[in-house]
Image 1 (cartoon, rainbow, N blue to C red):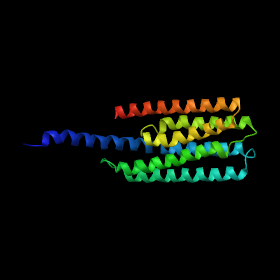
Image 2 (image 1 turned 30 degrees about the vertical axis):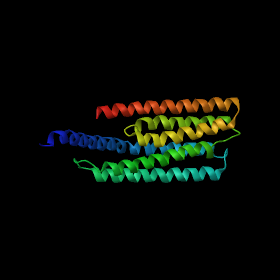
Image 3 (image 1 turned 180 degrees about the vertical axis):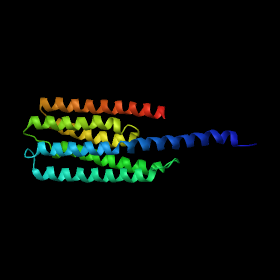
Image 4 (image 1 turned 45 degrees about the horizontal axis):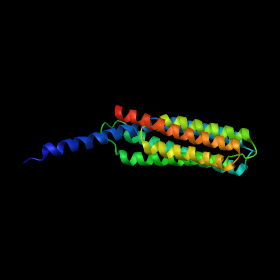
Length: 204
């Protein structure tokens, strides 16, 4: 008896899965430079506005970290473009997917750290601006990182959860309300991004 009829559907599904993953990875890298540019501009703006309200050494160290991560992600995107240029065959998508997810996670860790390092306890206005910037980064990442769940989870969770915890720890009524809203916003963003991912996955 031939095993071809039972094996063929499995082989087709596996091949189709590789094609979909390859297309998702291409989508991620197509938007990489935009994400790096926004990160660089937002980090510089946030650092300038928090300058003098928190220890300047913390601002410098945080900004240098974000700059190194952004430069690394830019170099990775350029290498991907050179590698994939003119290739009609499937990419080694797993390797490039993991590399992109690590970069997104490092960037998310940096924004999450900003919720602690750049948190100006005596200045409520600066706290609000910090939360505003972090929320904006999450919304921007929701569309740019949506093609793969590990990338948007690696970015959104630390960016949203760490600042929310910092607000809740403050303990007074105002900060408890701000922290609770930050948690709700983070959950809503994760759900929305998951739906965008589902739409992309179905379309592909």
